[in-house]
Image 1 (tube, helix red, strand yellow):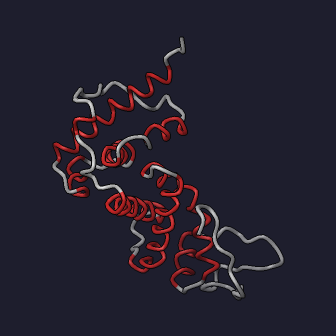
Image 2 (image 1 turned 90 degrees about the horizontal axis):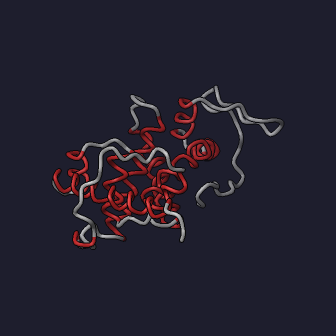
Amino acid sequence: MSALAWPALANEEERPVAGTLTVSRSGPVAAPSEAELIDGCLQGRQLVQKLLYERYAARMMAVCLRYAQTTFEAEDVLQEGFLTVFRTLASFRRECPLEFWIRRIMINAALRQHRRNAPLVAMSDGDYPETLASEEFTFSNYAYEELLAIVQELAPRYRLVFNLYAIEGYTHKEIGEMLDISEGTSKSQYSRARVVLQNKLARLQSPIN
């Protein structure tokens, strides 16, 4: 499975799903509802799985890229995440939007990837600044691609903490539980990551002499 393309499906019959989702060779398919996608996937319909994948793949790839150091690594996380989605979809209670549930699965897949490939203890704290970041500093004025490239340069554990706190909105207590570190360590690593990002962005904006 590539990052944004579903593999070709061989000889699958195209027929109504649960009496609501109709797929026809003769014309375009009306966009199915979230409930129709879920029901069709639970029935094991590969074509409906493809539709679900195509609806969410680009947004989930953006999530994976924030946690990965390379596009190749992000694609691995995306694939693992969607395999988990289809394997565990029956456990989805529909108490929140499907996208929120899929997003959490992608984050968990990214955390597993880091545990396998980049141990969180692989870097010395001495390599990162002690200075606390200014809370007045904001990243909202920077282009997404520019900020993403710099975030990807962070050491794995600092990138994880920054993403989980600044982007996903988890508390430091929750992050500590997810990464098996103390709440204070999460706060410290987040602040240090902000300093590094501020310094990198400042250098990018500095005029070249």
